[in-house]
Length: 266
Image 1 (tube, rainbow, N blue to C red):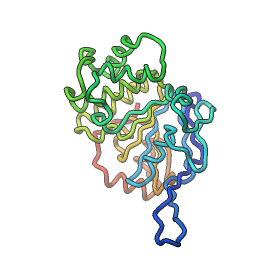
Image 2 (cartoon, one colour):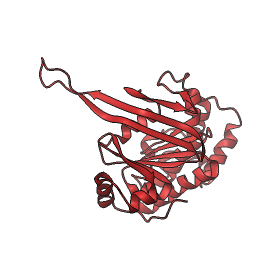
Image 3 (cartoon, rainbow, N blue to C red):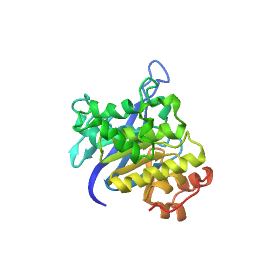
């Protein structure tokens, strides 16, 4: 891996809570506390933790959907701050999102081609968009004949591959995937995880995989970061975290989550 792409330093996020009484001071909950994460070109890193660990909050900060209360996000050394769509177009071209629920995130009225073409148009990506649609459909191992279908005509695995193709269309440097296999059956989950891993290897795009289970991250990623109560419990290579977990939080995750068939990250 060479060249730092995405660098998060000291990210902290606090949310105000309901007042316990009319005269009481409004309490604040710290959801993310001083989190660092560096993603380099070609990297594959998983962010894991139990519900409430801060994964979703970190994801929103990494995508510049929300601003941190403290800390900083940079892409290739350039500060990134949430703002108007036009001002962030450069960042959206480089960092793309793969959602958890492909059915809910894909417009049922659009064809597959229209869905994949949408970010190319919105981000003013130059080139032949129709040819790019076919390129990314082939890359995610879908028949280009599906370009005229709508999401309701596809299986769950096909819909998730379309969501990945849409994210790949602008040729981003980083893919951020949010629980991308949680709604899929086990054999399809394995296939999609392998696809994400292989696409990262083939394209050189870094992969940030946010997930609740370590086995999924181990299959697709080379290293992992475990969040617990908003802080980094431990971080390192997936082999080390699986074979020699150092914290109770990691051991609890390993004990509680059903395992996928696991192969060492390539």
